[in-house]
Each structure stands twice: as C-alpha cells, then as structure tokens.
Image 1 (cartoon, helix red, strand yellow):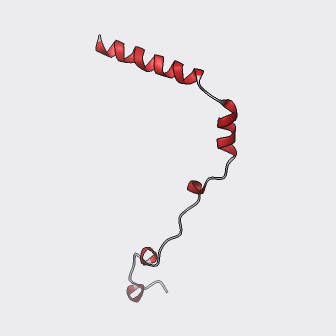
Image 2: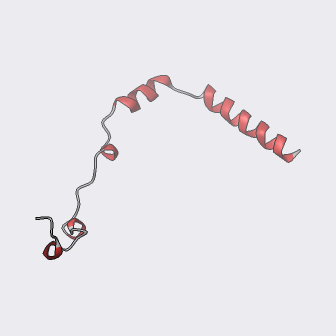
Amino acid sequence: MSSSNNNQDVKSEINEAIKKVDAKQIDKNLQQDKAANQPEDLTDAEKTPFIDEQQRTDK
C-alpha cells in the first residue's frame, strides 16, 4: 500500500506544479542565450595533448 500512497503523493505534487506554471517565464527562459550552453575555454594545463607529439607518426 505504501507504493500506492507514494504514487498519490507524486501525482498531487505534479498537479500542484502544473497549477503554478508561468508560461511567460518559461518562454523568457527559453529565449535567453545562457552561458551554460557555451563551452568553457580550457586553461593551458588542460590543453595538453593526449598523445606525446614526439611519438606521433602521422605527421
């Protein structure tokens, strides 16, 4: 029965969230260019190659 009770709790939380949705805020959030969507620049230490340049044979 606890499983059934947990499902009811989840459904009531979802219904509560649906009632609080602000469509204008969602649209505004989707329109923004967020810095999180852009790759972060690497530091010099992070730019080290995976293969030692002196051992490469494909050059």
